[in-house]
Structures are given as C-alpha cells and as structure tokens.
Length: 238
Image (cartoon, rainbow, N blue to C red):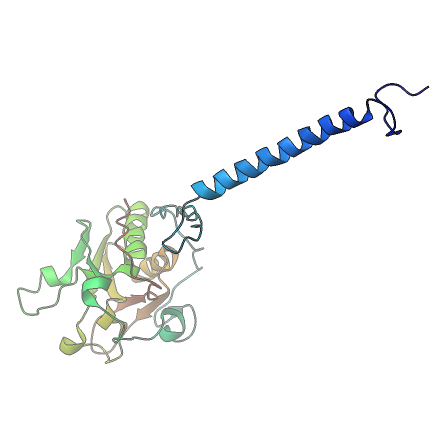
C-alpha cells in the first residue's frame, strides 16, 4: 500500500493540498532570490549613464630594486676598447630623441659623498653639472657605487661627464646620449678601469664601453635605455 506521502494518484483526497504547499514553498524561494538579486543590482555603484561601474583592479606592487647585489654575471675580463653587449650602442640603449626628451621631467640630481664629480672641481671653467642624470640611470648608478664600495672600500668612483644640453654640447657627438643624460663617463681611484667596467656591467647599465680615445684619457662610457614612461624618482635606499 502507498504511504500517505506518495501522491502519484491526484485523485487522493490529500494530494491537492500537499502539492500546493510545495508549490508555495518553491515560489516563495524564487521570490526571495529575485529580491536579493534586485537589491544587489540597485546597490552596485553606477556611473552617470546608469551603467554599473566595474571595480578597479588591485594595484600591482613592484618590489624595490636590490641595490647591493649584481644583476648579471661578471665577465672573465673587460679589456680596453671593448664593450658589452657586442655591437653598437644604439642597438642596446636606443638612439637619442630630443623631441620626446624633457629635462624637467627626465632629469634628476644625483648626490653621493662616496663619488667625485668633475663639475665640482673645474673652478667654474664650464657650466656643466655632472650631478644631473636621466631617471633611467639612477638605479644602475646607485648600485654601482654600492658594489664598488663592497669590492674595494678604498676605491672612489669619479664621474667625469654626464648630462650635456644639446645646445651647449661641444665635446660629444651631436647624437650623443649625453644630451639626454642617458650616458655617463667614469673613471676610478684605487682600482683599475677593467675592474670598474666589470662592475658597471653587473650593475645593470645597458651598454658599457672601455674607451681609450686619442684626445682624452681612458674612461668608461656607460649608457641606459630610455624609460618607457616618465615616473617620479624611485629614490631607493643604499
């Protein structure tokens, strides 16, 4: 015999009442879900056109660069008149583009008591300022100063030349990256230029050249790529 809860036979006296109670429960549940959906829709933030505003993506946190560790393996040697990477400077650091260069936006002032700056010792003979560098050079240069001190505490980095305004450039080629502050000429005290060149490469400069020009002393010429977007100074710690 069927139990009283099995109402396959709609002619049963309790079938209609039982099925109606279940129908009311289902309908009530659907109504409740609809009300909740409407509330969520009404509470969702909207723009002026009445369209829902999508939540902003979570900000991406970029870790601060480590300025005390090399970013590349040291080459076995760095002889005179050689450069890393191989090939022309423009292939690795890019060409100059004064149309997109903005000195107020792209240059920062570099200060470090561990360094010697040529412009601080020229007795006013030149209006250059070797403290001015492109923002793109800040991190590798600071890393270089730290790595040099770690390798040889007696060594001192000498910054011979950096930014040269294009309208006052009488030393470098017309298309020199010095005119954007993306190139720097370096020497060193109490260390060899070969050792310094290795550290420059490990510090992250995009191009390092050990130059021995006829009209000036031996030095290193280092340059960097242009930043993709203008950003405020990172001012990383030592």
